[in-house]
Image: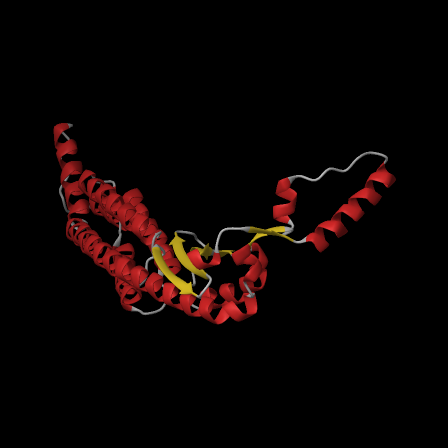
Amino acid sequence: MNSMTGFGRAVAQTDRYNIPVEISGVNRKQTEIAVNVPRNCAEWDAPVRSIVQGSVSRGRVGVSVSLERTEEAGGSLQLDERKLASLVGLLNRASDLAARPMTLQASDLLRLDIIASEAEAALSPEEAWPAVEEALRAALKDFLAMRAAEGANLKADVLGKLETLEKYRNRIAEHAPSVPVRLREAMLKRLAEADLSVSADDERIIREVALFADKCDISEEITRLSSHFDQFRTLCDSSAPAGRPLDFLCQEIFREFNTIGSKANDSTLSHLVVAAKTELEKIREQVQNIE
């Protein structure tokens, strides 16, 4: 079992620059991978995304690849004069056609890679990719290790809460058979208070109690809860991603407790159901963090 939360970092190094690679993950119902690479290394986007997609099945994963100049690389900027001349020519023509001046801003030159740092200008994306891939896989390994460690903590927590939930189920199962008995006693008491002498073996009393017992029978819900709990534990012990099926099971468990509450017609059962649903909500919150 893995958490969707994690972080990993590694740095690819060359003689002119460092390339930090960072991977972070947060909760998300579906899989979403956001890749941010240097603007002159857009060709890295697809392989980075492919490598990460092979290791995650749920959650939002952000991958950041950046450039850091080394002291040897210097911090000077370079101007691509040929690209700038071509751009100026196009703007002059556009100004003539539009009959109004077209201006350039410094941000335009940066965005179009006309002005770039010396390190960026010297970087060959194709030559640097093997080092970047190695750093990416190292960061991914740390990222997955952190998710696994967090997942182990989540597993221990939800299984502990599941034991509490099962105790509520057992108490409900133990108390349920006594509900029709108390109804019969209450009916006889009210009849006696009204000076109506009716035997407990009276057919009308037996029929009324039988109808009530059938109406508030929760044996099927109790059985299904036991089955859901067993499936929950099996999923927690599985190496496959379990977040979505666990979330579905939580919905089914909630439905069973809700049905028990609507059938109960008994204050003790109602209190137990409320307590169980409160504990279940804690489990559901944790399941939202599981891959």
